[in-house]
Length: 272
Image 1: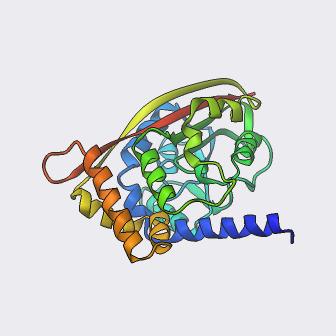
Image 2: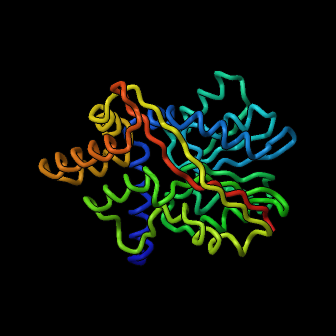
Image 3: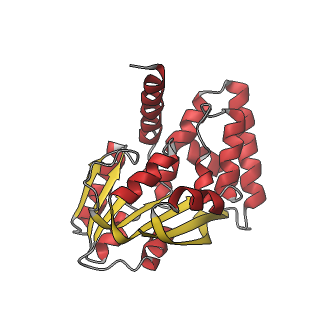
């Protein structure tokens, strides 16, 4: 195995472990309302085949399935898929969830009418492969839809803070470049005949203070756990302090809770 292949395998193993850590379902509860709105804007209907890439615990797959569409969800983290299956079963929705990689989707060419991903495929380390795969499994004339955190928004600032404390592996593009219009056009224009890009706001409301919110993310968000684990005691204290300061600065609530408005880029592309 070459060093490059070995390094990629190690990187992907680490990403999988990070997303399996904690309990992302607790985090996902606070982005679920925006996922419903995102799916509603896509105009999905029955007799449509939908693929949700990096589906997590089902925030977008489940509202897509409520339309009567035939929905498949794919993710690298099997424990998140188990949560998604339980959520779908509770609503008696027939969604097929399976393990898979956004860079190597386990489906034939031209399999789906709609290929979507919300805050998911943007984290895969090779964005050109992601773009190619999203297009490959989509039918010509079908829809490719993404929701990606922007570099300038609240979540983008959060990522820059953690990357400053624990730099990512060299050569890996920042995930939030998927939230940059020029970058998205460069990555998708070859595969699409029409591309609409819209900046939107996801309002996230947490029923606890910024300080408690930091503890919440440390407990439940796997990548945040992984970041803290790579720091010594002083580094952990410094990161927690900076996270709390950023949340306090962005907080619009005045009742002791935390309310932040996080910008994302909505991508709707027609497959050529």
